[in-house]
Image (cartoon, rainbow over all chains, first blue to last red):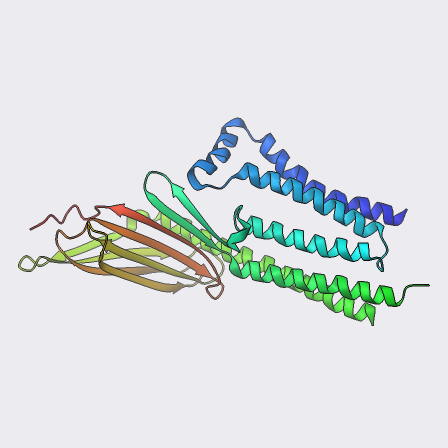
Length: 156
Length: 152
């Protein structure tokens, strides 16, 4: 029962913060501000609506993986796979957000500003991306360590 | 053994997350504050020029005051490239300064060119923080910025 509650709570966290809140905030915006937000795409190429859709999908995936991880035993291979996949998807999401919708930019987001003349803005967050990759690697190592020792101590 | 290894890794993750949060928020706040502070004082940008009537050589000096309203030191760079009609760089100048929190410094960009040779300019503004590892930059092309310098 305790495990089930923990699994549901952790899955709800991802659904609320990545899937519901971003979509709801765009939906609840006053029409004038919403039209400005949607105009950002025309002036800078940043597609806010697409970013929110990706966050929604990633939120649902992370929720499912978190639920699976919490419902399985630490020594189960499913638990390890769910933990590693969560790290990978979380890292993809941070690359996506730091690249302002382009995960391949690896934290160096170039934004063309179309106002009539030729202007470009560049947001350099490569150091943040690197730190994020280190966190992902340490988290993955922790999952492997937990799995390894749980398997060793597993009651036969 | 398991608990110890797992605990060390958990503490490492928390420290890394805290560092990430502090470094990125302090840097981005300082960069955006400096940018907004500088844009608010855009009317304080001064252009000084002297022209040699015999040779037609123009010395252009641009004074750009930058104010850091953030909480960490920022490195600000301003660059100007003057371009001729065929796209070649006729003159270029840049200046960069490290500006501490609450400080105001003036960047001075100097360029020398022949009168009537300029058709446009590339302007660049770059602001970096935290050992220059996090940054924001803007670059734009301005056509015919030297209307005051007609051909001889």
